[in-house]
Length: 287
Image (cartoon, rainbow, N blue to C red; front, side, top):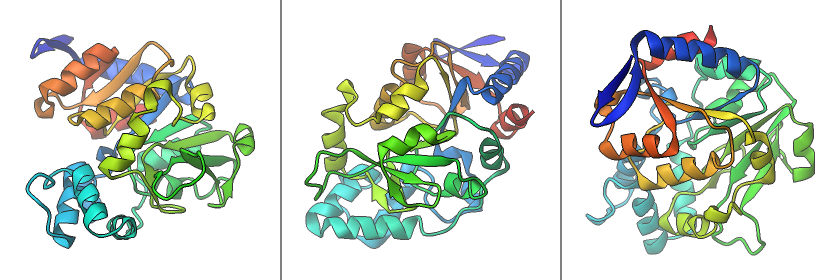
């Protein structure tokens, strides 16, 4: 039933499972866009930092950070970029995500479907690895504007990892959108405060979002899996990526670990919170 939680309504129990079963059918039909967060991969399965806080902690093991930057991945990266060099930030990011993370059963399941689009909102290359046996797909990745002299906000890569043009996107059965960039195949990272200032000055008018993403999200609903929205930047990205899409969106959540701002964000954006343990939710989605 719908249960109140801090003044917000969360779908739980049998109703949550019934909703997930309905979403499983819509997912298989291509009507739902999975929006994947790093929480999809169990931290115990990898040494790579799978939360912004863990990434900030990794930076702190490499560089002495001021108090204002500790615990904040974006501020930590900005400090390193300012005190050392952008290349140092990129090298540390590549080190942090150097481990090849084995795809989960759900990653592999998504790869078995001919989904029009999947959004992957973290820096690891796990989803790309899950698609290794397919050739009819490609990625759009956000890129840093640091040192970029041309007016570009993103790059496209085909299944082999080669950079390609937007003209090739229409031939892809599946488009993977990595808005923050990725370690694979070309080590693109939007990570520092300066990176995000560049993007956020334009994102309201959608310039940093590829047309292919805008086209494939149209009239489709989003399902947020393994995502947290406790950071304003994460909320902003989710809001802008799902803009002008369908009208019924969902997020798999653990209400006991959510902040008031997260619940408020879901309510304002019309994202229905589904309270279900993630392993059980994924089991239902894979049907």
